[in-house]
Picture 1 (cartoon, helix red, strand yellow):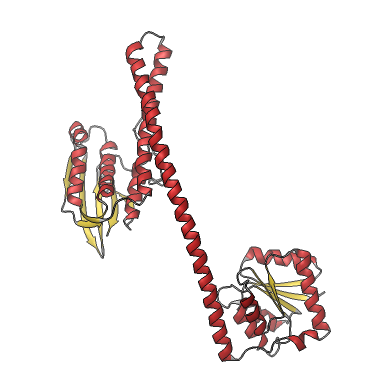
Picture 2: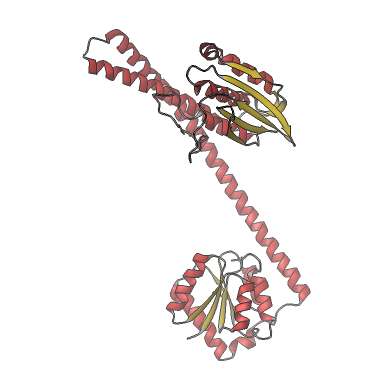
Length: 390
């Protein structure tokens, strides 16, 4: 039975390797990195070390070089077992700095154990000492080490670029699907809503009370579904690239949102004040949606018999503008739910209408403009929605 030091920063990989080696009848000493492994080995030298390469702190190459230059450890067999550095150049470099074997993850347990036994046997018969590289000089090691890391970085950058390209292509397809699905659902829903309402108008009262109730439920459900599809369509448009950014007068945009909500404002006797707002660089259509939904929410979630008082302000904070939409409404209950999540509704549909997409749209708009959005309780009652825009 040999005493084997296994070195891997990933707990799962370390645990699996430990089970395999112990299954071969060997004693295992685990370490999470090169520095820890050196300390353990100096205290009680093992018969063999099996090490990963890509590890934080001291990577496998540096660890192997330190191992070979240690007076008490330099003759002990060193095996690389890696899934990150897998090219022939990597293997050549590993052997040049004193590694005895270069194995690629994953291997069948029986094959891995056979490789370990082969190295142990060659060590016992003295074959390793004669075939092992003496190691590179400091200058050569630094040069080859830099080339090896640079090559791996180039490979990783290429892999990342490929993954990003595939992700972009998948996102385009997803955006197209969301838009088409939402757009094509509108027509049949409009038909269902229209004919259900027509049926209720022309033939309501000709059935029993239960049938009339069913007609009302179907008509209301069709209208809610139509509203939901419209909001989904609006949200799906935000996922696309959209229009090019340009100067946006947020004061004018906010004023237009107030005008669009004028009927509701007049109905509930609301007062909306708009402070001096800046000109920013953004997408005007999206900024318009942001103000519209925040103001619509402030009007919707008002207290009974209390006229809504809403203010919109902005202040400079470093390189960005921080906006605040303040209301005196019912406030947002403290809960674990993210109110900016799609379809997130904190109230029953019978209490407040809506699809639960408005604040999700606001969050998406703000994020697309490089900002953040959150809310705070209004000390005077109600809520303050804050967001930043550059």
